Length: 380
Ligand SMILES: [Mg+2]
Image (tube, rainbow, N blue to C red; front, side, top):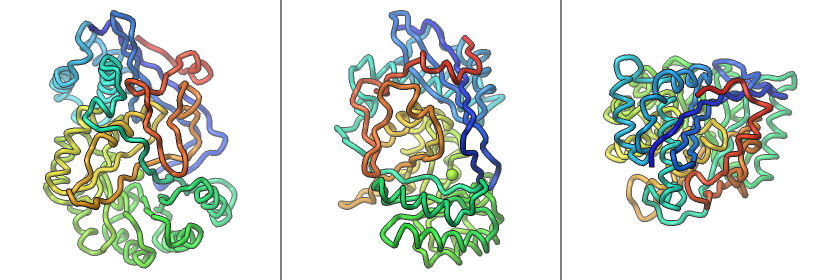
């Protein structure tokens, strides 16, 4: 089996309900998908996190030509050669995200070739579903957050979720007020995490952590700069709330310093950004050496969701105990048609759990004809 062609597809949609978080506002959603086609007529799909025009150009101009003519099943070799060629220019960021998309597409082909769902190829026994947490409770819009979040909390509980994540970053006073309010809406039995998207200095993050500790916070995500592991350690020393982070980190080389420093309690690699399936598996292994939980950051289309789910299903919980903490994976509930409209079989969501795809490969049945209303550009 050899790769005949690599396509990059840029999709965009304008949101009916724009939303904001501590760093900026979303008025549209976009993504970059790659199609890797083989000489014998099969196709594998992958997705990159981040600015789609840039990751598309990276695939078109730089990485794609590097893997045409090669065996897509040789995922380790392809990853190593792409990274070796990139290391002088892009050890992190969009270049690694573009590599991630190609790596995911090659794993899709490899699992199709083996005739099994990807997570089975990665070494897992059959898994029916994994519990997920509701990522929502964003800012923005005309309506007061109080009434909007109350409705969202009801929707979330009605759908059977037992875990939610809310945004913080509006200032410590306001955040503390909103955390208390949401805790009241979802009840004491619901798992509640907060995410600052690195809005705060260590002093502010510690202040917020101490104020919300009585609300039994499952984790405090990206409290401070993703460039500063010492700032995480400072916050960690001052609160009993576990810290999560890693969506802005890339490759095993990037994650190693966080694990060596024990700066995280939950590592959140994004499979579509950190280096694909190949690298996510290595990052999770490194995390296991430090006894750090891994729970992937998930923000993409059905392709990115499937990639994260297959990866996560294949990983054992850490540390090893008879009753390990249950897996919990991110379920983005903001508006995004790419989770449902471009595939034959969207990831099943039921009772607050994601169901593992049963078909071979990623197992979602990408339908390129359905890209049309969203197409910004296709390059090959
Ligand atoms: Mg986050």
